[in-house]
Length: 328
Image (cartoon, rainbow, N blue to C red; front, side, top):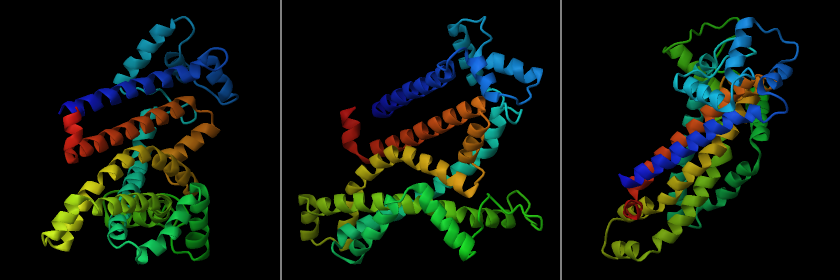
């Protein structure tokens, strides 16, 4: 319990640092933060309500920096991330619409890549020199390709040439579509169909790391004394492999926490290529429209999501490894 509390304190400090950095970023621009945002908006029309919202968000120049920071923190605790200057709606409404798509995409792709890659790594380490070892260069080749190139290749082949999957979007919104958003079979099937290529992009780009990492640790663990003794005492082969895999998986769980940020970054690029309605596409549109409140909201959302996933991975690590509990 002490180990988990120590990690919780660390992540709370990291979250506070991210919030503070998010507050100071627009204020580090030349001139006042409000004038910088208004300059970025250029000729876009702004209603009086939007102007008041921006003054409350970035300070009107009459408030001290400390007072603005206190207002900013208070708004965050009340779930107020400001108003989007390009869509004239609260940022939280946009995040509430787009965040589930990104969580679904990243969650499904990460689970598939981690579980499948770890399983293949166990098999490759157990039967070293076998068929899986000959296939490793193929997986490594896909990992070496940048996300946007791999996504474009899948889009052009499976989407455009062979027409196996839709070219983009989150579900069928064509004129002849009969899909109704909601928990029904037609909508879920359309989401799965449209999400296949984005998920395949992330899985192909990340699975080689899990296979190689697990394989190498598995080979070392299989030569440990306790594993050799277990095999010498006549335990079934699958139980010996299970004991070795249980200990060999700890570095993979630790790597999962570190790689989540890279996967999230890759998913943002993937969403842009496939026009997938998640935070990546919203970030791209916000950047083109110079929508600072929305960009800050997405930055905070992605940062918090990465911290939460890292914290959950640390909890799993502490539960599986008694040494981590003793060190605390």
